[in-house]
Amino acid sequence: MNGDVGNNRIIASGEKKVAIVGGGLVGALNACYLARHGVEVHLYEYRDDIRQMEHVAGRSINLALSFRGRSALARVGLEQKVIEQHGIPMYGRMIHNPDGSRRSIPYGKADQCIYSVGRRYLNETMLTEAENHPNVHLHFHHKLIHSDLKKGKMVFENNGEEVQAEADLVLGCDGAYSAVRRQMMKMPRFNYSQTYIPHGYMELCIPPTQHGQFAMEPNYLHIWPRGQFMMIALPNQDKSWTVTLFMPFDVFDSLTNPDCLLDFFRVHYRDAIPLIGEEKLIKDFFSNRASSLVSIKCSPYHSSKGLIMGDAAHAMVPFYGQGMNAGFEDCLLLDELMTKHHMDLDRVLPEYTELRNPDAEAICDLAMYNYVEMRDLVNSRTFLLRKMLDNLLHAFFPNSWMPLYGMVSFSRVRYHRAIEHKRRQDKIVRSTVMALVAALAGGAAYLLQRGDLWRTAADTVHAQARQALAGLGL
Ligand code: FAD
Ligand code: EGO
Image (cartoon, rainbow, N blue to C red):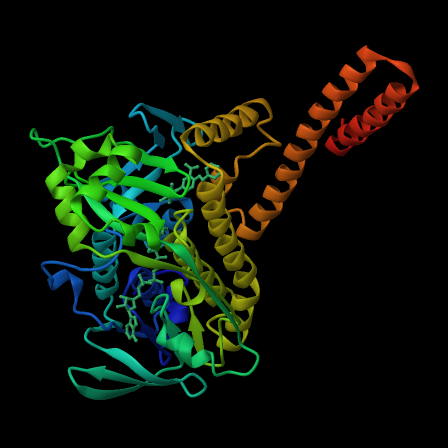
């Protein structure tokens, strides 16, 4: 038995059956959580069991795991295992300039870091942990094709045959193109919006050096900020790097032959060419296709017997490195509510939507802000400057100035509160700039003091400066 409070709950919820659709990151973690509530858990995954596969196709080989995701793993006892055995700490960003020079800026205090973890390893670890519980049953090669979320009924396709199933709760953890959400879209008053951005992404690889070492400083998230074109690299356990190139689809399409590609890299990512290797770059680029990026918001997340979580509920663009972290935090919230309401789904589900929706939409927005900001404003110089200023202000005003990146990545401050904080800080920045400009202009006008016209101008500017300073609370 599970000991302490677990005993009661197991008896109370012994007959409850939960179906999890999707055995990706969020589905697998959910199975671990629900197993501990003692309910009968059935997880249905469309793909093969990744633990039995030699090669896994699909997206992003590694991901940045930050505090929210770690907190969620900790509750099922997996945090230490994941970060100690399979996480590579990244203590800051390493910014690559077009001339090949690099500069690093820490994320925060010396011990603050995010971890690069392999998607496959993480997924396998969670599936194995879930399977250790006798009340968890994993069903691979099961693709959800129909569902009735009022009755809790599902139909799966399994090796060409239809399989029926029923549960008290259907958890849709089936990703951005969720079949469970498609069913919810038929509900009256269900809100939905999706946006594809003009950028796509492609993953490339920097192999280990001849000596089997990392080809770049390992404990950083490497970023090549080039406005429209962005490139990042995260370290892997085998000393290679997964490089992700983000650019508009029409730019991907314009690189039609090896010469174009090399010319493009020589201009924008010169230092990366020898790291990837010319031949490998050409081979990998032309044997791959760029994938699309979508942002999805919807509400509510529940129906009487259904709930969507993770990307199924809030797919976001990857420019904050928070998609998985947010999905893991979803599991944490559901677990808290299940405990609080003793598995009473009629209370758990509406409260889940109510609490989670503003935060999920906030992180979708924050991720989109980062996309726009990095695309339209940030080259490697301004990126450095912005992050240095952020750290500097935090050093001077540790209690009032919190870099937003830190609030999102190193705390569990609710995402919608982080957005409010960002708005306040943006306002402070704007009025500081105005105050400085006004003070400078005012000072200049005052010095000139040529006749009434100038005096009036100086007065106006002074008044503006006072107003701006008042806005700052000075
Ligand atoms: P998924 O991982 O997509 O899993 C869904 C599962 O459901 C899959 O296994 C699928 O086979 C299964 N499924 C689908 N349909 C059905 C069906 N009909 N029946 C049965 N099963 C089905 N997040 C971070 O936190 N940090 C990062 O650094 C980061 N980097 C990213 C980089 C890129 C390029 C991208 C695209 C995303 C990144 N993310 C990152 C986001 C992260 O990948 C997702 O948020 C996360 O994978 C969501 O997990 P999920 O379980 O909800 O969905
Ligand atoms: C001014 C300067 C405004 C994902 C910089 C905003 C994202 C944005 C995709 C990084 C880190 C984890 C990531 C920072 C900004 C992962 C991340 C950041 C990328 C791209 C990413 C940072 C996987 C945006 N975190 N981040 O502060 O270092 O700042 F570059 Cl393209």
